Length: 285
Image (cartoon, rainbow, N blue to C red):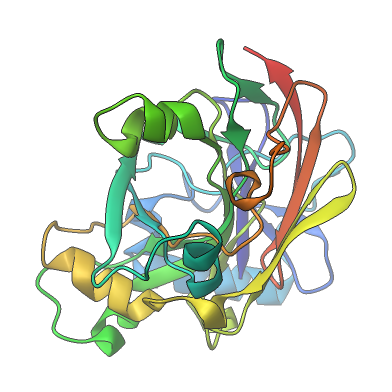
């Protein structure tokens, strides 16, 4: 299923994109697309049955904002340097264990919402990423197969980053990752049954129409199931938590000088095959 949330920011309602591409209203069946729903197999079966029956009311998509596909996000755990080609372009060796940092849930915006360039920023960068949404509580998992079994679905994420804040200002990466609007998510949450192999997904990103990133999750150093297993050894992952699994090569930081960092007026578009497409215009904060 392709689950999403539509409406004005803060007042989104649950919806579903059916097999014919028709937007359907789920608000009469579920309260929201969130961890409680994703952990409830019975409720998900009701949604699936209603979608297949065609009984859900259609929504007019014209002019309707698409919000983040997941509400009440618990935590966002991100993996850095998780593609072989991205590690090479940044001049570092592949890490022996996943590089982990956190992004606050309040950085999340809709897939077509405005992204704000922070005040004083000179190195705002792009990163297309596969986001993994947890559907079962994961703690002390023993295998990558168990890790995959705890995934409810997948989405496109844009891990916007300010490299000077992240790398040159001391401390941890977090202050270059948590500026407002720095995590567009969606358009859909695609349930795991529609993604038979998360390691066979092409990812692409364009800036002002120019292709900048063209990669595949097959190049991940730590695949999805292993990332979930690894994280479960250090923290408990709950339904509604999100794991961003890293970005392929092609970011501004990895390019020759002068590096083409983002500025107000730039337009970024990104997609993952089968998971949908995003588009953001940048403005000054």
